[in-house]
Length: 156
Image (cartoon, rainbow, N blue to C red; front, side):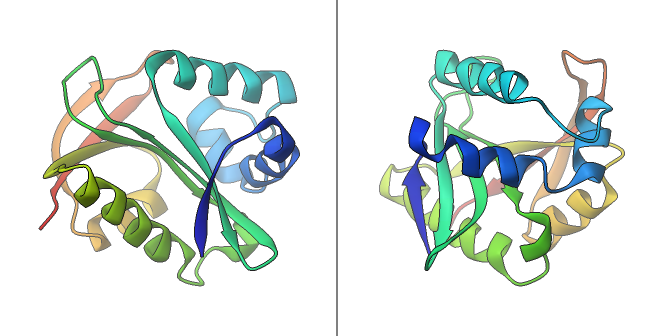
């Protein structure tokens, strides 16, 4: 499994992955499916903040999207901004394997602690991240008015 930097060529694969899980889309943006324009806007917002976005490839399959931000201007921490595994590949270990690749990147860059946010209503997300050893540190309200639980983890 590898992380491939996101490119316009891979955009259609990202659209498929991001629209494969209506539950996640509903809890995050209150809609089942995102338009290509909405996804382009999200990509651009991330790029404007300095985020790095990757498509997760396993063999000839694209199984997920991962986005990281080395310095979140809101708190100065590195953040995992997005990890979404295509719905039909969830529960097969791809999330954990993607996190191993993420940890390798963070270690190479000398990062000792990172954060991520999970929408309060996303119970499967909370279970996954707690299983990854993440600890909740605070609650915030995002730009869409959603409560976000901020998790933090030290990388050893």
